[in-house]
Image (cartoon, rainbow, N blue to C red; front, top):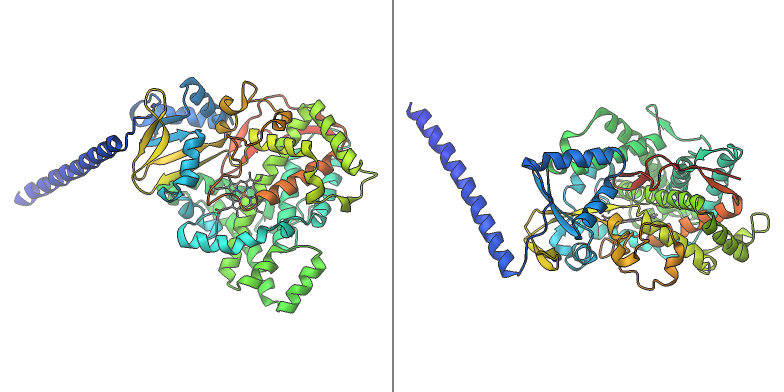
Length: 506
Ligand code: HEM
């Protein structure tokens, strides 16, 4: 009896203590919020725990329209920052450039990448994309020099894969096909070649097969799994299905074999390989810096994840828009032919990073693709301590906002880059000409900014520009078969056009 009585008392005391801690924390937050002149953010209406909001979001997500829905919310509420409760979790959504810059740049130290490390670790280990703090700094020091101008300006090896890509397209004999599918293969082959000095050959059906999966299938699937784990935040560990583990096995076995091979080579053998490759090979350059197999393994997979789908999303979106806008395609072809000739009269050696830079319209087309279809359409960070955001509070959204330690802040680059504030009434339209008058784009951050800015920015722009340029030469006739516009988008860690990109070309 006494025992039962004391058990009840303990429960009541513990509950009271928790409630007290909660109240003290809330009061402290209120005090800081007042002290720092912050005001409340507009809150999206919600039911208990935001279950209806979550249902709505998932319904839009299934339809490939969640990015659009988010943009519409900002427009409907006439603000750039909103608070919403989803499944009991309080989230801040922002497309304000001031807030985004604060999170990723000016107040970088106030925010972390949340559970990304734990969620992505089975694929990315301790690589640059999944770590922060000292581990991230070391990775950055090793990787930054790999993206200097000389390394990224080699286009000879890329041309081999462009030729394979063109051959696959010609198999359709001018009939309708999904170009996105082939672009994904192209960027996979090009990135495995660049990283391992050996392409998986997904365009030529030579793809590496293990455990019933091709490398391509395994890599595509694994990305979906790790993104879903990231969404689960602290519950990431409950999502670890057998299929995920099998796909990881394929990828790690493949990567391991290349790391082993490279580590068995002597320095002179490596120099010899580099000379024979005729260009730059990532794995050999890294082996010169470190011979730790785990570090090499992690670097390779991180660069692969960072670079392959992002570049593919940009190229596929560009082909979609070029096919829909024949006048843009015509203007682009004219510029390409003027500088480099058509396919029959082109000296491929004349195409390089410098000569491509002279093609202003090509640059404008690529920028417009990056603007409307940011490969990383949304991102999030988690507050490491009590802090503020510069804007979004109060009735007119101009006041500072208090951010409590642990608060998750979602940033929508999709909404930012389609904002009428920066791009006017036709913000939703594909209009490369707008870049003629834009000198310092205010609302443009496809590669992020601040300390975690994309290391492969120039690499990606060079690769995408080259592929689009060659596409103009190889396929002057391009027709769109898109039925829905704007296209539906699958927004995971990177974006993909949900229904593919159906075109015909010759
Ligand atoms: C159109 C193509 C690309 C876009 C739009 C893009 C965009 C981004 C963005 C937004 C981030 C920041 C992610 C975050 O921290 O949350 C990032 C990081 C990164 N990107 Fe890219 N990327 C592209 C292509 C590439 C390529 C081709 C490579 C390498 C071959 C690359 C390498 C990296 C690396 C290493 C990081 C991590 C940087 C760090 O955390 O310090 N990216 N990229």
